[in-house]
Image (cartoon, rainbow, N blue to C red; front, side):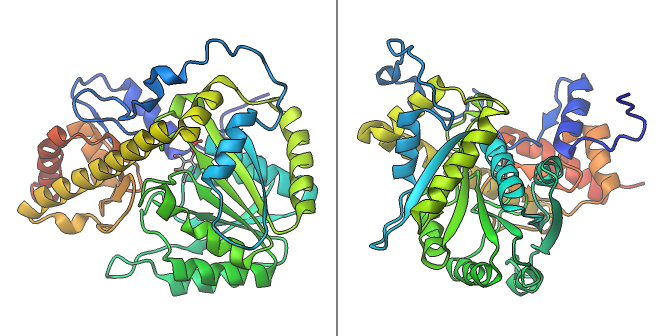
Length: 394
Ligand SMILES: Cc1ncc(COP(=O)(O)O)c(C=O)c1O
């Protein structure tokens, strides 16, 4: 029972985190996680939740809300609202991070809509695949690769997703694509939405990084386009990255639909799945976040802090690119025009393991380096190590 002999390794992040934990070198550099740490003090960069206006001490009463804390659901609905004169219906479910939101919508589509297959970008966040397996969905990939100008090869993507069939699920990352950081333009979203409608596939937007590309208002423009062309679609959000709440596991799954019946059915089935798995999500952190979103002054602070985070990521990327350019290695970064937390280094597997073994610098095996945990002070050591690896082989 539970034999692990033929066990395939965990996803690369979980696997490498355990390796890093065992490394006793004090100067080890973990550049794997998509978790922002500010310079020097290594905080999340978000202070808005420390505001005294957010105390919830007097509100210990439990409301039995399977779909999530009521004020939180209401505030998220308004945060994600679409500017349109056309009628639409919306239902928000509070989930256990974006991971839980993806799991919930896959479970629901599999069990109650008999969906069989989900399409992911290649490459994608590794855990997407595990969640598909966990919900007994088959999966296919669509190309998501960069051309020589570092732009998304959209034609190749389109060719692949043209093969989708009625009843499939199309998962697209909303912005700050993990790992490539290159996102669809609005015109491309529109083309994808029309194709999805014609093919009768369910579109799920993984918006785990919403707000990190160009701020919340601009990032959510894609929702308008999806609404314009689709009868229904689903959006998954997370506060892990956009409010530094990784440990709280706070996310949402929202159903947008042109017919009220669809939203009602979505809520009914979501309730069944949630009740029979984790019963209901945690309430206190949801109440706090609802207070931030619902207050003009606090939400202004949140938006500013989100902008600062996004600026810090760009600053780190620019500083790294400059330092690499100075030693003739800037071409190592294959996605220089990226949004979000990650850049990708064109290194071989032995080079990546040499970086870890010799220099105690860890990036993912696919070359993904997280700017979120790269401190400016560490850039010279990183560049020196890359220089040694690239130029000093005996
Ligand atoms: C693309 C993508 N989706 C979803 C998630 C999961 O987010 P959460 O921490 O909210 O579960 C991540 C986390 O790294 C991610 O990169």
